[in-house]
Amino acid sequence: MKVIAIVSAKGGVGKTTLTANLATALQREGVGTLLVVDMDPQNALGLHFGADPRSLAGVSRASLAGQEWGSVCVQSPSGVYVLPYGVVNESDRMAFERHLDAHPNWLTQQLQGLELPPDAVVVVDTPPGPSVYMQQALSAAQVVVVVSLPDAASYASLALMQRLVHTYCTPRPDFSETLYVLNQADGARQLSKDITRVMQDNLGERLVGVIHEDQAVREALAYDQSVLEYDPQGQAADDLLKCARVLAQRLRLPRAGATR
Ligand SMILES: Nc1ncnc2c1ncn2[C@@H]1O[C@H](COP(=O)(O)OP(=O)(O)O)[C@@H](O)[C@H]1O
Ligand SMILES: [Mg+2]
Image 1 (cartoon, rainbow, N blue to C red):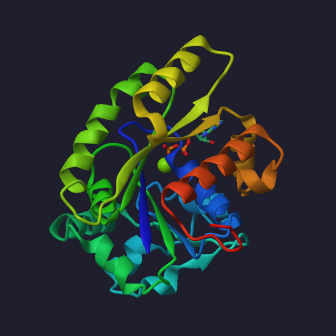
Image 2: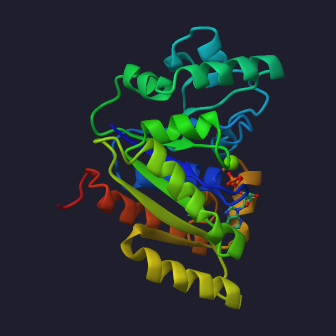
């Protein structure tokens, strides 16, 4: 099992979009069992897989009730298994967060308890910035994918993410590496082109994908679909598939039918 944490210091950069669409793209590439886990109280990840946003079931409520995670896991039509955060009231959310705070390796243990096949890949979505959720995801991850926009504020916030990775990941022998994805790149804007170039120069092969700004990404969500289903020939779908292939190669994920 490999755990990938999708993180960023800033919000609205496309973490949830990338968690859902990269998992779908990895599934297409024939990478074992794919599970996505929503560790963000916004509970938005399920929407990308057609889940009902009013559904109470999810990791938060299940954990508070001592229920097995398997009972709240749903398989999407694309084959990706989805564990939503679920809907909880404020006092339950706070109780859940206190539990996470008191048990820093809770997510790691829950994932181990699922007894997924060895080739399984788990992609964890997180809220922006430091939180108990991000700490849990970083503590469970072998690979961290930092999502950034091609703007100065996003670029400047990469240092904060590097410090958090250094705190929660680097000391662990099972931690592998930090990778980066630049999202909403726009070839018509000079600043976007400049920051893309700076990131390519500074990060080299650790920049595993550049996903372009594409209206189809927003539309796909409105139709409860992945971008790959909604606009398979579009720019974003092409970028996402390329990124998934680079990620699969970089993580040495076994792919069904792939020549190795
Ligand atoms: N490549 C893209 N092109 C166009 N819109 C995008 C792209 N990536 C994300 N978005 C949109 O940006 C908004 C924020 O994305 P989201 O995944 O919710 O960010 P986060 O999880 O980091 O807060 C959403 O409306 C989403 O549809
Ligand atoms: Mg999000």
